[in-house]
Image 1 (spheres, rainbow, N blue to C red):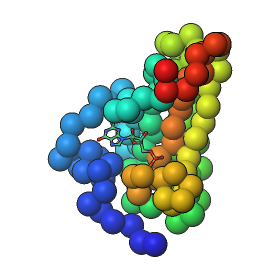
Image 2: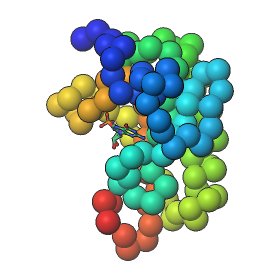
Image 3: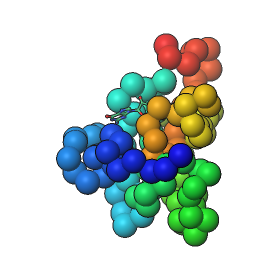
Image 4: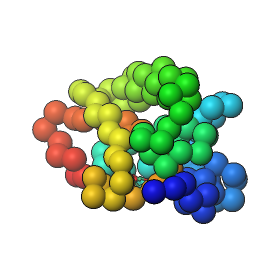
Length: 116
Ligand code: 5GP
């Protein structure tokens, strides 16, 4: 499957749609998920145009993973979460709904079910 530049994250990256942005640099944008699975659910979106992990440029991936770690640490510090899930889906059967590579950082809290 090829990359479709009309996907919603591409529009957000181009500034055509709003988002709750928490960080941006030359390589990625970090924003809050509009339908959070838990308090503090954050998305790291590399700016390079790739549909998902399968077509991503390895050099771009290598640049973004340290940012994913920095954001995970910041989310943990701010939310005081008891744990964090890192999620990334590839194609619709696997749960991908927005076809621009992104990483979910989903805080987990003792005794709180996801989506609650
Ligand atoms: P996927 O299932 O593709 O890995 O996840 C896409 C995520 O993007 C979902 O968690 C969904 O809630 C989130 N999302 C979809 N549309 C928007 C939007 O317009 N703004 C933001 N901030 N998040 C979105």
